[in-house]
Image (tube, rainbow, N blue to C red; front, side, top):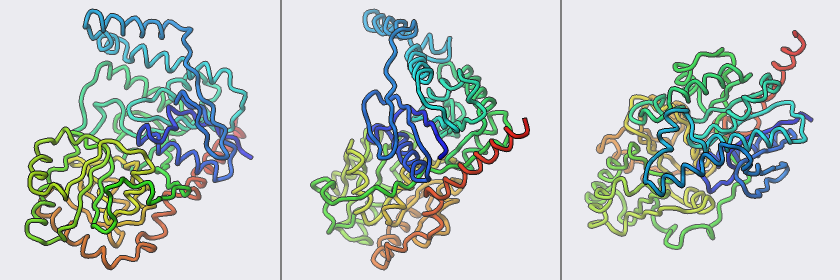
Length: 422
């Protein structure tokens, strides 16, 4: 049995969408027949069935730790943002570096000789990748997974911005592209986008989409108390970022209600925070249609998945841009939920390229008229849908463990051929 070491920031599913994606991937690696050890920096004990999960302990015996704590004290006492100064100077904060040091020490102590190593990340943290750069003997069997562009000026507009120390962050990521045996991405579009910023052999690219967790089960008992399945529920689960605007959706929804082109018991849910970015727009709608708009700042993953599964329609919002190379971490959950999806975002996107051939998939742009039409048509079609066969088998397979295993097997075969040729 091949042994795989997974190094990651977090496996706490309520932590972030990245952590949810990490857990689903780890479960499907184990399901594919590998012995899996997970070294994670969640800093609490978490168990996954069939997987040996080891929590990295915070290592305080290094100067990065004490430098970080000293800066925190000066920040509080003198009200000086010294952390930004040092991050601009060094590329990374001292907190970041003592986290990397802790992961590095844990790797030095681990009693496990892996055949393959995968580094995962979350949000804007690539600490596991930086830690593994210190172990050149493992680089020839290392897959570095890049879930989002990095650093921030590598994002497509309107998400891009220049952060402190971005040049040094880019130099770090260039090292990852050079040293790792493989570079994994959740989407082909993201791989192409990142390779426009970094120089590396394109044969290193491995596409590993976010995974469907077959163990996920939706229970009505996990639903919020005011979620009534007798209503028509439209659910957007995920934080509303400033550039991920719900304005066209809100306007279209109110027009549909006003014109009675959708049932009056239709409820539009926003789950996951970020509503404050659009407070004025939400207030205007709630003044007239208070019972038709529901917002929940934070719910745990079980509740969010239950809402997605017992909804009538799920919604994916993306920014108004010429391109969206991201694969939303929630897309496999929505496919597992077997409910129609409205996508509001650019056609030049990973979501559209994957889902455009699905029978009940509706793509729209950030145009109020188009969104209104999508809402009306989706609700009408929803009455005729056989949810068991909503998505084609190949779309389930694309996000499943068998397709993942094909990628892993190809990696092992290539590594074996490379070692034989040495």
